[in-house]
Image: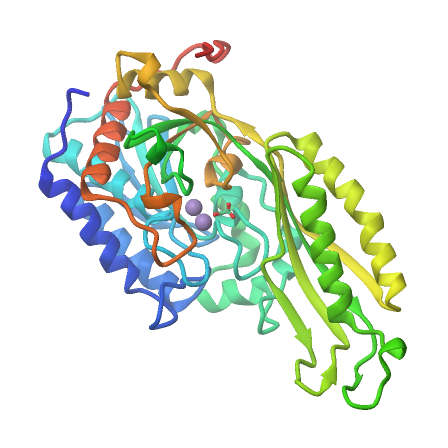
Length: 422
Ligand code: GLV
Ligand code: MN
Ligand code: MN
């Protein structure tokens, strides 16, 4: 690559990520949920960085923060570059934020050099990608893509607050969410830089790679209702223990995924009620997150799982309720953008690491609006969704270099070209 960010740029990226990581709901780790006080603070901080970089800033109706850097002609269609500012519970400080902060640094670099592109650039800090608060992901990017489902406004957080009320408390109007949607004619493409969250780049000793596709995912909430009772008096064969049913269901979830290649499933949350040592669990709600590289694989796994859940619930005298709270099909990154990223990484194509993403990204939702491309940056040990998530300053610099190079050479191409096989 022949454009090179200065060492101070990569140091600035890491320093900003450290600053953002202080905006957390808990003192003992980074947690920043959608529409929280810390979300507002993050938007204000990121908005100030956008302004410094020469962008006009606004917060849209779902709570995304957007900075626009005009091109040679005011009002030209925009290259959108984004990622998310919300986090999982006890998160690392790079997942999502690296992409936003790096994009701002790239625009800052253009601004410092007085360069304007033939297109505008809009940097977006998406409000909710992780779906921690309301269980449904891509809220920010779906609003921009015009695919936000209104019924989600009735989804409730762990305290029983609806999304509509949370939006109002944040100062936003739930009836205006449609105004966050962009028109496809105002957009030329969407780019996202993100940490890999897996071990591939590290194993290949490469700092960056190009994403070919993003896996599809389904999230479900399962509630099993049995009968709460006295832990000392009810004989084992008289019990309708919802937690034991949930435990068996979790093993079934593991089984249906494990027998398929590139299919993974996780029970990551479980709420036991009433939740006392000496009370037989009367009801349990747990989450299922299932993903696969091919949508048909995920659909088949779920079709196999459903009768198992019914059978397990029946055998333990429990009733079963299953709710699908999120569904996203797999998405292919646009071959013409993949090629431009590859060209920026190296003139020697055989050295470029191409890889699919098992994690979800805002790019998957943005693909409903426009063609998307993604850059991955190596992270240590492939560790993510964990406070130990880390990247090196050198890799942050290489990622910024690459993104800047892609922006400066960006040309809208014939969308019908296919990816050459390696
Ligand atoms: C987002 O990080 C997801 O893949 O769940
Ligand atoms: Mn994440
Ligand atoms: Mn992410």
